[in-house]
Image (cartoon, rainbow, N blue to C red; front, side, top):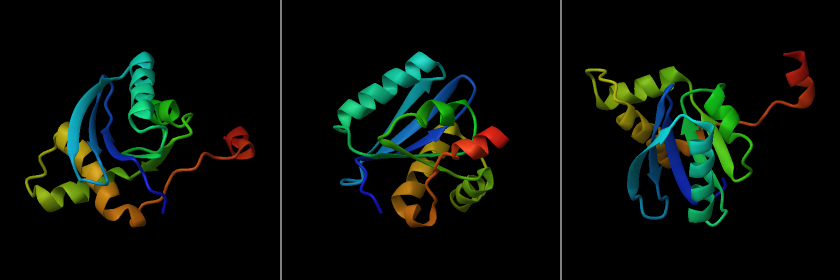
Length: 135
């Protein structure tokens, strides 16, 4: 398993993304918001690359397709870990039986999945050109 400079959970929405970053060495967490705009995402990724010294970063998100995946897949230092929405829902329910959904908390749960259960998650690898052409 690759070592990562940061473990990140992103809860995606149409207008903004809630982000939770965990430093895997210290367990320290920080939360932030990111506007859903190509320029904002590109600026965040550039700052993240500089902050992590170009080392690998793991990003967990609750989707396997969509604009955020496509925006992040082009960066060679980011490894994407998409999870099924039901996986996050069950994880959330374990800690919040009321099933209260909160974007900031969901981003933290996604980062925790990477921090505590990464060996059970599968990294996303883009489809080959032939498969994309068939789609």
